[in-house]
Length: 127
Image: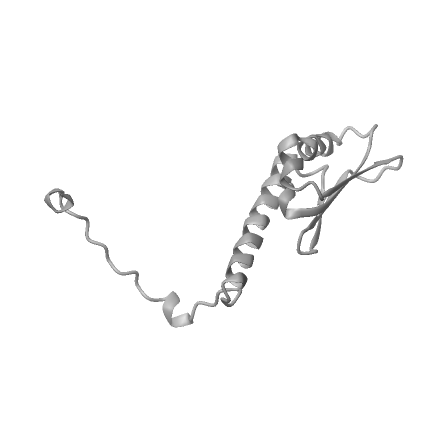
């Protein structure tokens, strides 16, 4: 998960009962496997004393920053969103390195074409 991020900032009040998501996400960030995937990713923890809801802010390697309301979003959901966006970033990078246009533009007429039919192979054809 950290391989797609350059910075993680976790903010919460230790007396706030809504901090579970922050603590779980912090544990995931501190896991050996996560740290090994990107040792340069900064993980910052800010322990607050005010009534602000817990928040997790991540900065992706491409500089895009995204903040999550950790009181309303589970650590697993945040992790999944990061992995999904990371997969998108990897795909984008792969296309750009291959000299292909990004995002991929599918012509309107191709979108409405029927897919070619595929005939199932008979048992004797499989030999």
